Length: 444
Image 1 (cartoon, helix red, strand yellow):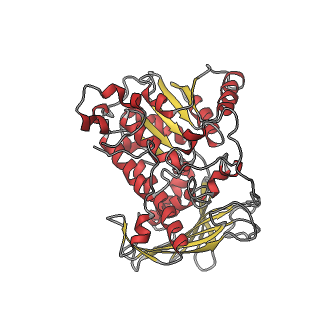
Image 2: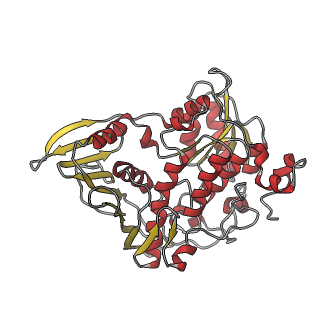
Image 3: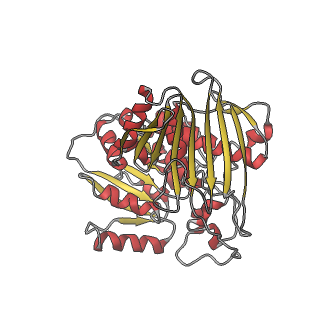
């Protein structure tokens, strides 16, 4: 029998048969509506640096929500965040933990939001579902395609409300734009392009070093292989290493990948091409900083549809009027028979006919955390704007593009079975070897 985590992680299942204890199936709860509209929902934020700080402030601002616990493997960051909550946000000091398993053992926690490095996203979310917690998980919801599907299975099996952190789906401007596409404002859509052009300077080279005081490095590594500590594989720069991150396509770009897929009305492709490199710099970065991916959906639309995604890292031109107010070019363009649509930030613009006359447009953001909390209260995953399976498909596209890049060849994929066709090497890259005890458990 495979060991999941520490012994006390499954301590509460001692009266259950061994197989059920391993799957933690006894902890399934109904997503029946919350007891009362004014009942407090107690949330733990797991991963508190960077995006995690936004989780804290966003959730703490919602009525009837208490950020009860902070969890981070870096005690220095925990101390900063607890002090900030008390002195700047003027809210009750939270409990603090360094091990997510202790958080999941706390029966007083109703839900967790996960803002850890990517290699922890699915595992923490699956464990949380098994322990009866609702989940908000940052993008991408998975580090590899296989574990993303396992997260969807866990959300269904344990009947949890799981929101993916592609927050543009809660923006009224974006939602209206998508509705306009469905109504045919630019005619039949044949291609969507996602762009992630962000100025990324070199990370340089840094040698391995001693683990900083207060950092629980073994917990930080989690399912990743054992390796010595380096500052260039830790805070933020982990994004550029395959064991922990997915490059900029899986970092910023997953937002635009998600919108491109949504606008086309597709899930996973059957043909994948990818080409790029780590240009200009000689440093510790493993992932490409320039990447062009194309995905083909032969059965979509009249003659099939294409999704094109491009990552650039340095000086770039402006495309479609996106990002002309700054250096970064981040957004989407949808191409149709009768015009094109640009999505930039929280809104859209249309340009119609051969003269590209300006058409309908709208801007306006929303509250993705509030949508998650509302769905929890209603006990209805259908209210989520970015439910786990939507997150899985968009994250999986990033993984597929990266696999084609790393192998240096075109790939054929079975979107229903979520497997490669006739390519055992590519097939192996759909998952990873998990370091015990940080193993994705069976969903039983």
